[in-house]
Length: 186
Image 1 (cartoon, one colour):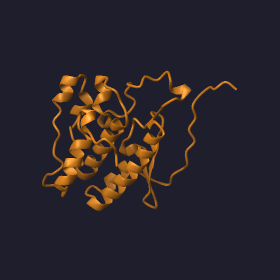
Image 2 (spheres, helix red, strand yellow):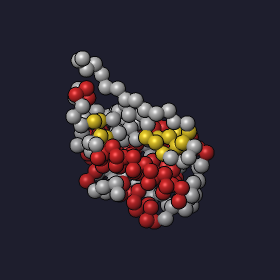
Image 3 (tube, one colour):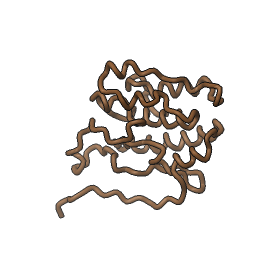
Image 4 (tube, one colour):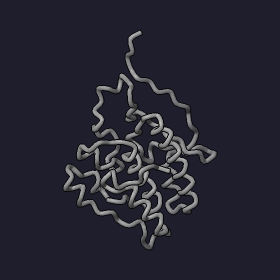
């Protein structure tokens, strides 16, 4: 038959979203955040190895089941290289939630795995601090000049115990310019 759509079948997950978990755990231990981060990275790497970009990686699209396993959900914005049904989607269309969307989407630069890395970094930053690394400014970027003016707010302050090395890692993962982020999630 002629293809009429792209379908995704997923499992039912008994658990809570990462957003709910964050509300229940406003000051999580670093070890717990590292465990959740490792699982999120494993999920994103699986996507990227199959030439897929999630494009809407945010706390509401991550579930934690009763065993503490993190699951990536909501594949509605996922870009899948080579899928016929996805060809009419612009690769630079902003499909995700603005606060977690990498600046390259806003300025028309090429997107790729480092775009999902930006979203991951924002989530981890928020888990540790309860705020966003650029506030609402990153979601307002419309050109390269505005992007260059974004100012990272350190994750280290009196309300959390984030070590310097984590702040440095988050600063690099959420850099407004994609080629200045880590080369790989590993």
